[in-house]
Length: 89
Image 1 (cartoon, rainbow, N blue to C red):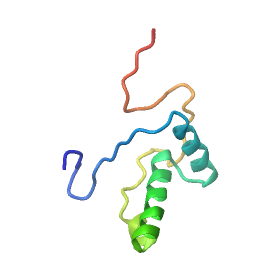
Image 2 (cartoon, helix red, strand yellow):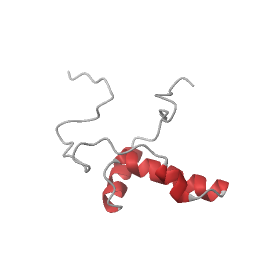
Image 3 (cartoon, one colour):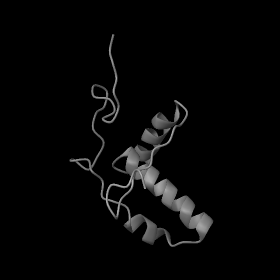
Image 4 (spheres, rainbow, N blue to C red):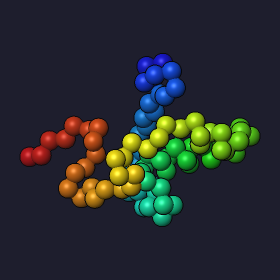
């Protein structure tokens, strides 16, 4: 697989509407999850459990741990996304 990081983890990327990241951020805070990634992982696991009849706990337990050092959202007003290349003019 082209985005496999090791035998236990793979990277998934997708495009979304411009509004979706903001909605995910707000929902993750409301759900008291530590990051957007944790929210997306949980949402996908819930959909897979529902659609494929798999145990939700099993799917959630397979997910890699959250990588934020503090285990919670930081103030991103001054920092921006970490995996993008942006130019300021």
